[in-house]
Length: 303
Image 1: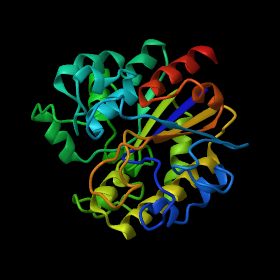
Image 2: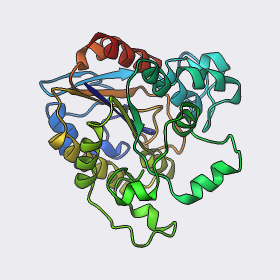
Image 3: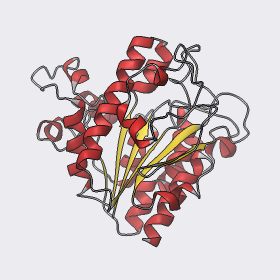
């Protein structure tokens, strides 16, 4: 069995108004095919089709204020109700006060304790490793979880050999960092590459954050482009991955891009999209983003 967690930063369930929600303005044939021709909205938040299951997840935990990435991602990757434990939503980095929980409870560590192979497939440029060497604690939940769990972070050498993915999927942003000779690839090619990498480990994580950036920008054209890129990436992945032995899990930490009328995050529920083996078992156990990690661990212990 293999579990692939696709973390899609800043994606909630919102209005079906294409003037506000770029999901309803973009061409998203892969998402629509999975969900019987529709997309999630306030009026239609749950789906059960032959191909997929989608349920809404609460991100607020009853805490006032707008959800943030630090506590939201921590809840997603550890199962701890981080906003409740910290007393408020916090981000973009995880609270130092909760670092011990992150170190002990993150999914990488939990799967490792079960004897399962894990990987994080995002590649990082040399500038990032120079930043880490300064001893900073200002790291995202995913990268800090890897460092605290001994999970290697992939580099340019991995990316050029097809052993990693760029966080923007197509490699374009690496050129801005001095890697002019790195070829641009199609989203479909990146998806197929990820499908091959999934087979090497029990648990694999890929993180995509441009959705959150596009939401903050309120640039409709960019938001549509980002969503269409991801849809093509998902098409390439699903064409190659073996869904009889793999569970693909796509979810987020908070809303943002689904409401371009505001620059801020939203309190909207986020989608939990499940495709492949064990999807119904996970779906029935998930009500909030803090339920995802325990549900995946339960699946690993059951199948």
